Amino acid sequence: MPHFLRLAPAATEPQTERPAPEKVLSGDPVHTTWNIEDRDGLYCGIWESTPGKWRIAYEEWEYCRILSGRSVIAGADGTEHVLAPGDSFILRPGFRGTWEVIETTRKEYVIRL
Image (cartoon, rainbow, N blue to C red; front, side):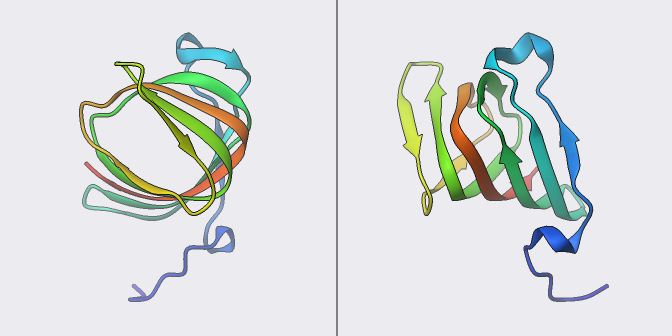
C-alpha cells in the first residue's frame, strides 16, 4: 500500500449516483464520487454534483473543501451557508437540512464514521 496518495480523479474509477428520489426537492442532481481512500471507517476523495436540491441527514463526521461551483447548505433551523471555491467546513453527526447545488459543485472530502 502506498503511503502517499494524490487527491485527483485519475487516482480511481468514478462512481455515479443520484440522491434517493424521496430526498430530492428540485432538479435532477447527479453525484460523481472518486473515493480514493476507504478503510477502517475513513473515506477520502472528490465528490461532484450537478444542480438540484435534496434533504441531507448526517450520521457521520465530514470535512469538505469546495474546489469549484456554488452551493447552499441550509440547516433544519433555516440557517443558510453559501459555499464557493476555497470554502472549507465540517458537518457533524446529527446535522439535518438541505444541500442545494446552484452551479455544478466539486469538493474534496474526508469522512469519518
